[in-house]
Image (cartoon, rainbow, N blue to C red; front, side, top):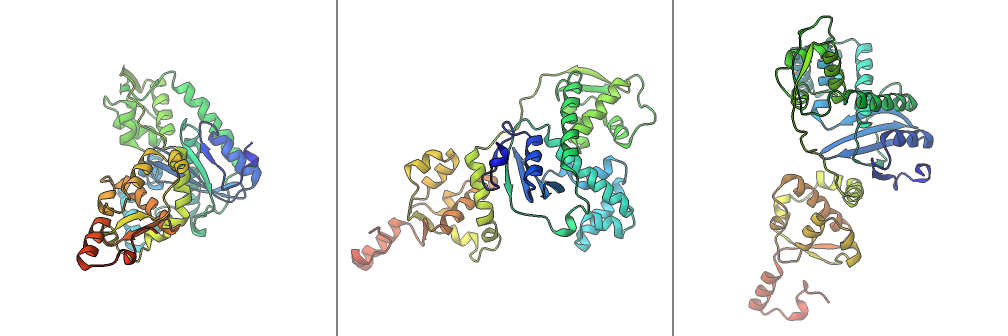
Length: 370
């Protein structure tokens, strides 16, 4: 049962514990902290205060607050650019910039922030796959909603989104549906989002349209469905469904990231030794992983650890891809902090060669295992 899980043990797959169940657990347990949900390269963090939602952060630029304001007609592109420029120059949040520039009233900022957070959370009700874990962290006070969002209300609306998505998929069967302008284009009395969709449609698929319009995927699909029913848009063709681009990391990967996040993040951001200097060293195991630990490791982690043999420079042990390199650095720092790895100033072969040339006795060759 979800209620029996502690915060540290609370992690797993969305397929087993959908978003509604996760929020229900947080409410029943009156949890305070961050519920982290990951799918492919996307991550969202739902911040909770005694079980109610006080914030939500997404790493997808398509879901940023400014995009929400643009699509809902609260700002023009020029106004958004002005506000973002102010953010950069004054080093303030977008909400503060909007207030200081007089672009939006305080009550509108608070209402739209709330709506933006709600949409970001409801979107996760539509994620069939993903991984989650709970973490003891909180946003700065100024970034939290002044009034929490009731979790039960979020669950009810999120459930409605699931039903609505199923209904819309009977017409817009997948993202390969090609759209064109309908008999009643461009339509009348349209919402800001509908107007943007109508002005953008010109033979694209639903997927291509979303990548151009951005924002909430559900809101985009809802708009397209509504406009098709009203004959403002029409379906021109249905292409083959593209293979899903999402993937799930292993649960081991998730738990590893969860474990290293607290232990490594500060060390990684405030390393006293430059990384390029570390890369000239050769890592060697002081206490190598056991056979049982190796069996539980994902292939990527095991391959990286196998390269830490005392003969391979760290620069050569790291992968070429930046995303993998970052994870490997986390793995390295974690094991260094645990005292299971050591860094040699040169490879074992070089150390032995230098010792032979210098006539160093075997007993004084400190790099050799006792």
